[in-house]
Image 1: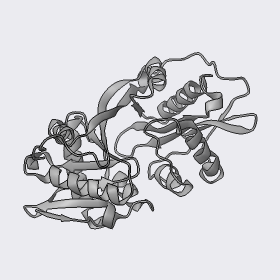
Image 2: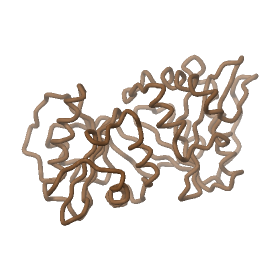
Image 3: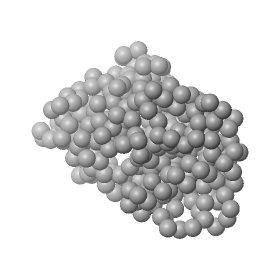
Image 4: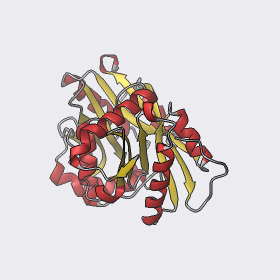
Length: 306
């Protein structure tokens, strides 16, 4: 078993591990090589020190990445039970300590029972869950418009809107328990410069000349899906129907563009947003969980071989 940093040439092999893990845990692939390369190109990620692959039997069989929001560890299903997950957990915790984190945090597909057992044995507890919600666009219905009069929706202009949308994102999500502050550069790289961002499908809401909300929408290249990357409404303008209006308009544009499905993610700690999505006819497709424990807390039992 060899543990080393990945290189760009490893992207396709790492993707195989991620896709196999997704299919085993959530039933569908949820990663593309473009997604992976977007992450690796981020200026706040140092691939040489923030990521690792495991080689066994002359192939890459596992992958780990430590980012601001948390750590991802994926072991190819056929290689579970050989201690690979435990070794990557040890590496990830060491890297998180080097970065000065106060909390160890990992996200994991809901169906990964062996991975969850490993984390629980190491002292981790379930912190929150994230549902992937979906709507067949042929089922999109009309909804009452309760947004303030004078609200104007327009397409995204990336360079013009970047600073304002970054500030909107910080204001909208600062109180969320899973919020991780991003620099303007990191926000641009992860969201505005994403390979599949579609400015025409995205919506920006203005009221009185100020940006009060936005939907950043991605158009998947491998399926006829519109994905809502971020729905943000300024706290001073929440609960006024702006979020619903933004979503409905985005979904209508998805459908007009020939897309068949709309998807987005929502945290279990955001029940208000979940209710909005359900009222629009969205239903859960699958779930990821986040497990966490304070740095310095020791495991309560001997972890199983991951």
